[in-house]
Image (cartoon, rainbow, N blue to C red; front, side, top):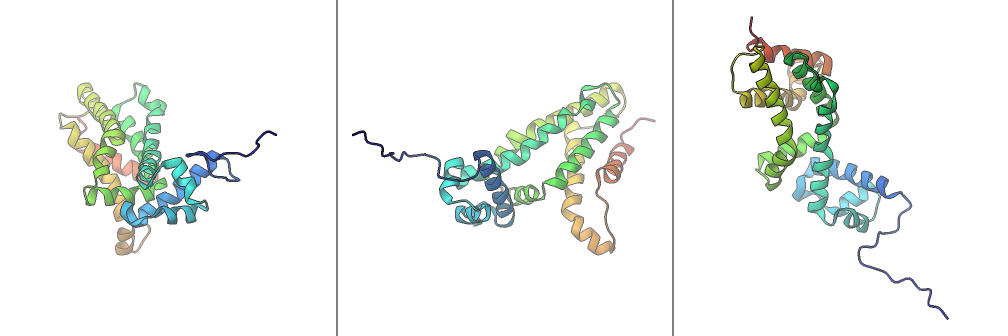
Length: 216
């Protein structure tokens, strides 16, 4: 008689009624919210599993351990930045100001959709977490390099005066990110809504950035 029993194997996917990709997305979404509130050290795999409504074995199947889950959350969130550069304006020969303005608008959209990531990053850099350097190198490095090249292009064309491209790019990004961080406080102090929309805020940032850089 043939043995029909099924032997369990290490690493076998836990039983689940959801498709694999949906389960992974649910786990990442839950983990982002928890890491944003508690950080890497304060979060637990058990809490992530409960929030995502899966068993802990499913998390270990997809991400191996909590560190792997944390890195996956960062990679999944920050890699979206690369999509900004798919916009056709960056492949065109339009003035540098238009390229910068388009980047600013798309980066503002990114900030609006990634509040949890902004909190996670703030915690990482505040304590100089070991993931901070890796994040900068793997994800933000290319983003900064591309922006620096655009500034250099503007200087070469004579559209911008000679400045330090690295400082210019850091200042541009810093203005946007800092405004989102200070947004709740700014509204409380001013007593009115602060418009950080891509169109209005993006236009303001672009004009501010270029006021002292454009040649007459």
